[in-house]
Image (cartoon, rainbow, N blue to C red; front, side, top):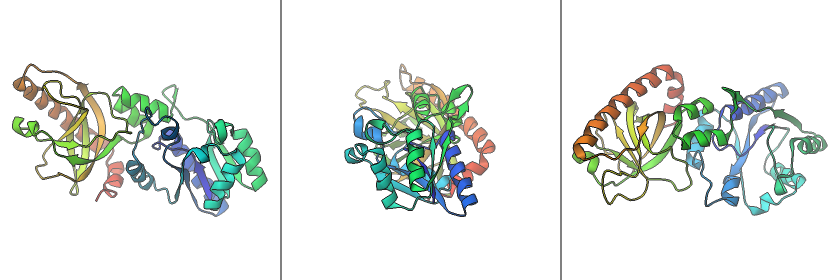
Length: 308
């Protein structure tokens, strides 16, 4: 089999080029293809207190299905694996699955202290009779697309830019938990999503998104922040008003695809001012959702098939 090899914190356009190469190489060789990645991002081992994932394991599994990756071998990443010499690392993964060739990005490093370079990997692959394709960085709007650049865009709230680099919207998949009920009192009930500690969230503010629930796409007005208008509010909140939906989502897991940022987080003088702004936020969400659903119907149909 031919495998694209990498950490793959989300599959941005650069990663997708690796997937395409692996698929093409496999077709020519008359074999199958897939990805070899890690169960547990390497940075969570070395920087677990500060590193944040673009996508949780569950979200990444959805992306693997969305992208049509037929085989995904997830190698548990730990200190032992990190400390292996490059040759030992390759032997370790080869014991797990049959490898005929690898596809990597030009910046891929592996093995103890990241001493494994593409040049060394080429030598090791030749010794094992494997093919190796090293793919150059993907450039977009004058910059290199990388997981780091996507992460930075999300942290700045530039979700449109992140979407462009990913090739699909940044998403949040999480369980609906009990909130304080303020949204319902104000006339705008919200689904309060549990915040995952190791996941990146966009900069505080109001966003437009979409969510597929019970066989239908709904516009979503999403607020991420600390609710500064109300005293006593603690911790980061992720609250979604799902426009036109009035069912019960408590304890259910939903997926939000974030397509546009509306504004920064604001502190209002009182509930009346907040309600007026929420009405504007919902209009923005409906417009942006309709625009995205029209322009990306085929893409959304593929995502919808993955959501029960």
